[in-house]
Length: 77
Image 1 (cartoon, rainbow, N blue to C red):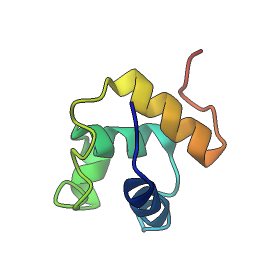
Image 2: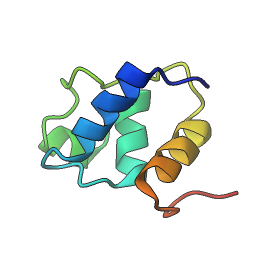
Image 3: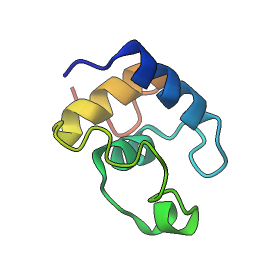
């Protein structure tokens, strides 16, 4: 899975938005277009990046997001 520099910058900005707080699993769900009660409450399903990686396997998106945030929470190797 290749993430462009522009898309990566958008992800970095997204991590600073209220409701996301750099949670790798939540961020991967948003990027893969997978809804959750927490994303719905934060009104993030309408975000421009929601579903931006919908063709990527969730496990791969989670692994990459976990690497980017420096956290391994919820990531299995």
